[in-house]
Amino acid sequence: VQLQASGGGLVQAGGSLRLSCAASGLPFGISTMAWFRQAPGKEREFVTAMAWSGGSTYYADSVKGRFTVSRDNAKNTVYLQMNALKPEDTAVYYCAAKYSSGSYRLRTAYGSWGQGTLVTVSS
Image 1 (cartoon, rainbow, N blue to C red):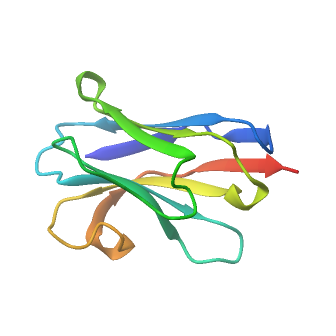
Image 2 (image 1 turned 180 degrees about the vertical axis):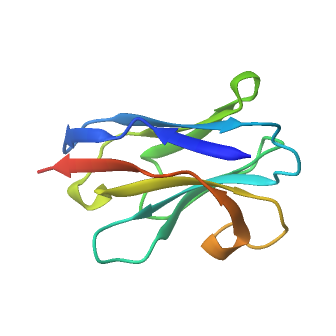
């Protein structure tokens, strides 16, 4: 499956953005969809994950209560609604698909990645 992330942009602190990740092709075998982010000079870090079958969601402590992951099965699209954005949320955001049973927090467990979309939060 190929992933296409979009929706990034420039927003002021306290504002909102919604990212989208469209999966093309048949999403066969996907167990989990996730968002990671990478700030300049930093490691790529886990943001949130959702079981492809629905129900279970997981969030990094830094975004809990502000970010919400959701999906539209009919469109094979996963969304990341980001509210109350902070300058420290500035990063390139990547969506990813996991096919294995590895930890949802480990980027190495994910087999497919989108190209990334830049989110810049100004103070």
